[in-house]
Length: 197
Image 1 (cartoon, rainbow, N blue to C red):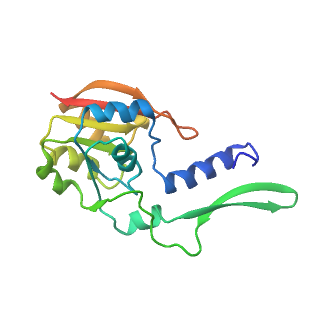
Image 2: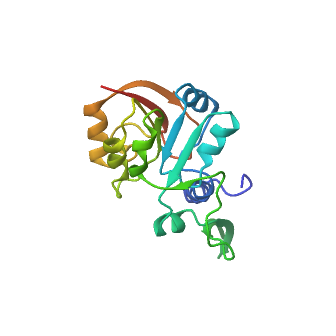
């Protein structure tokens, strides 16, 4: 991919392709080491399980869940990146893979959502770029009986999750750590760790 043209569209297409294949947030050594300190972990909205795999490779005890419904299948469907040429210009386009329809998991991801959290009170809750529209982020905070929450995403209003999720974090949780993570193009991601107030 490094040989393709350096322009905004190409960078966004590559980011889109890689986030479909791996994860919305990029795990790095500092973040993985930080999360290991808060183990065991439970991840809700694990996608294809890339963060869980990276943590398991370090010996961290993590249980990963995702609903695995239609939107999950369409978002994480494998894609391919191709170069198109039109009238002397080149562009990169990420398109769904023509032969592969089902997402490829990086590790075991169990089917489930916030309702499973009552069984995991001893684990730290991990949310990596919770979406802003489904409500599973706030539902996870409401269902979670444990003491620590780790969130990967951008700070402030641009951050992951819904407004209600961010407001509940502000009211009911105290930020105790912020760790740098590698970032996809045009993101300001961090790992934020919170303790219950």
